[in-house]
Amino acid sequence: MNIVVQKYGGTSVGTTEKIKRVADKIIQKKNDGYAVVVVVSAMGKATDHLIAMAKEVSKNPDSREMDMLLTTGEQVSIALLAMALIDKGYPAVSYTGHQLRITTSSAHQHARIIDIDPARVDRALREDKIVVVAGFQGVTEEQAYTTLGRGGSDTSAVALAAKLKASCEIYTDVEGIYTMDPRKLKNARKLQSISYEEMMEMASLGAGVMHYRAVELAGNYSLPLYVASTFADTQGTMIEGASKLMEQTVITGMASSLDDVQITVRHLPADASTLYRLFGELAQEEINVDMISQMITDAGEMHVSCTIPKETKELAQRIMTRWQVENPQIRWELNLDIAKVSVVGLGMRTHSGIAARVFKAMADNDIEIRMVTTSEIRISWVVDARHEDKVVLLIGQAFGLTT
Ligand code: ADP
Ligand code: ASP
Ligand code: MG
Image (cartoon, rainbow, N blue to C red; front, side):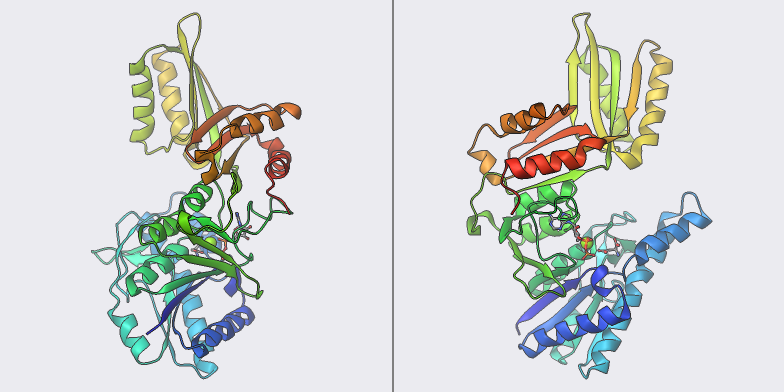
């Protein structure tokens, strides 16, 4: 049996009309001779609306109940899609995460898939049915409903494809993976292919087109992912192992994000134990520190700056207020208006001078760089949020990322 897992995102099933069009696309694949398993997200902005309602009844919604609520979004879309398929004369059956025993960790709202029981899917496929599965959800060993983090339906699809030894196609509202979010860079170039590593970097740096865990999982199983448009019949992008790549460029893509804030703490005692205590306390609150810069002044004091996710800023503020009570000489500030811009490319392993080209583009345009980090295949830097659009354009042009 040639099994394919197709995943359709929220905008692709945003209306009942679109659900019927998606059903036609699925039927085409079925008629091509495939056994088809479909993973769907909630319709349009359904998940956002559910979250907004939760916030209306509680400032801090209980996390178990939040997942009980969020999983309903996908339950609506799977039922409607299965109905549409049946109506068009194609036997179909929908399943929730619970029904397929998509077992996950118990971390509500960011659970990780542990295993999937393929028995029900196998049976339905053998009965020649199209199987429609709720993305984004699972269930703990204790039968509590969980969700996999925003955008997590991609991960449901990849996990199912790996389990069923199927191929995997991700259909969305863009024609594939571009060098940069086409909403942020108008002339971004569509890529024929991109490596798992590069896509993982881009996903974690703000390219919301793929869920990070989905790419990681696909890489672990060497499962190629085909990303393409739901409604346009154009060639999409393959996410696959580096050895298969068609294009050889130094910089493959870029990403930018407004999701971080910068904390700067000045006049700290200049010793390693201070750093250890400071970052230890941030870690204890599960605050995910990304970039760090540190400087020791001539006066023997230490200044430290780091970036953290915006949603953890209150926790960090609390820690810093406590530190200031203990050490009245320290000064700290939070900069909320920052953009983190990154370029990503496997070619950086073998080419030098990329950072210099980035810095030149910034210097020529009087854009101050507040912080920089690099890894083997990426450079990220922080600028004032108001410069984001300009930096994206400059870098897009400087590295040939536009058409
Ligand atoms: P879906 O609902 O299908 O899961 P998403 O909204 O999660 O869709 O992802 C698609 C969106 O990702 C696109 O509309 C696009 O704006 C955005 N995006 C961000 N970075 C990229 C990129 N590098 N290439 C393509 N799309 C990107
Ligand atoms: N419906 C979920 C969300 O909006 C999952 C997904 O779309 O992948 O985040
Ligand atoms: Mg998505």
